[in-house]
Image (cartoon, rainbow, N blue to C red; front, side):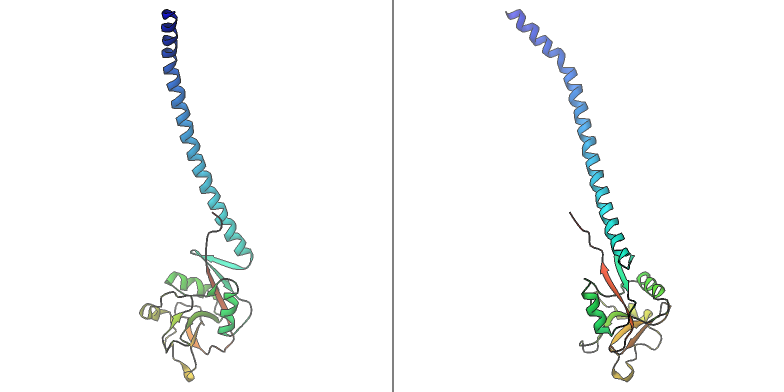
Length: 190
């Protein structure tokens, strides 16, 4: 009986190397599966992002550096334009960089477009309606020379007026111009 038990122990000991190899293979396969799952999650995120962007583009929005822009086809006063943008989960556009300014004036193609820069109700200080910080010194290079001039003491809203880097003009908020809405890209889903 004791001999039989030793034989069973020896048989079990003989199986240990094969079991270790199988365990190593299983661990390796598990690591590969986890890597594939991670890749699949990343691909799913990219596809969701691509779908989100394509959906917005199909609705007439333009995409540039993590933001969507809507260039209107109809003219509105500055306030009506801002209301329109807000009804579409956006704001009249701010300009945070020279590359963004270039994108906007090139897309505007020389037409007049309202942007989200105003001094209405702010005691004369210009500000962006989407709360983007307004840097007076840095933004000076975007104004048309001689602007803002507050002609008639009634120009409290800004528009893009020319197809150049220096294209901002101040105008009466009651004028009717085309307008540009801006909406940051926000990831949908988990």
